[in-house]
Image (cartoon, rainbow, N blue to C red; front, side, top):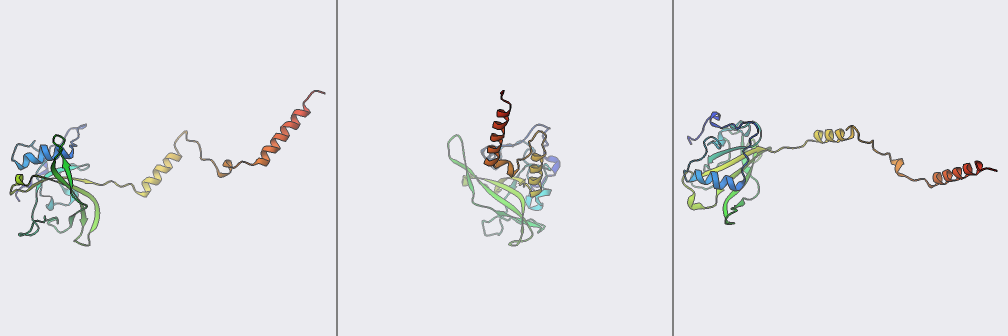
Length: 212
């Protein structure tokens, strides 16, 4: 496609700054301007052919979310389906669920759509699902879509809490300083006979200490 740019062209924000736009901002302030060939802040969202990379190798931040523009590539010359397989054959992206409309806050109209895709290692249909997720944004107005067929993508790795992590958290709660030990099951049972015996013993002690 001739759109690949090196990772050095990606602007790295200084510590304390985060690029976290909303869905509406991604469509109206970035993707729309890209499609109309309007100026877009250089390096904030680079152009990347993501099919050349595995998700972990896509240029950008090593952790967190990565944003980039991409030109959708038709899977077949005479079809409208997009190619989702990596060029190396190591994996493919598979759509999950239906597209969700993005509503503009000013006019309450649909301005775009968001599609969720999951990365699978291997070849379809027997690939292994991974934790890599991608949101693909496209404009809703087909008359604005040019031959470039631009979309905006957001990729991130889904975080999972393993069983080991859960057990560690439970153990940390038990061992936390100042935390009272758990009550035993016997401490929750009331024995009426013991109460009666204690009451009788107290009465006898009172009678014995009375003055003659």
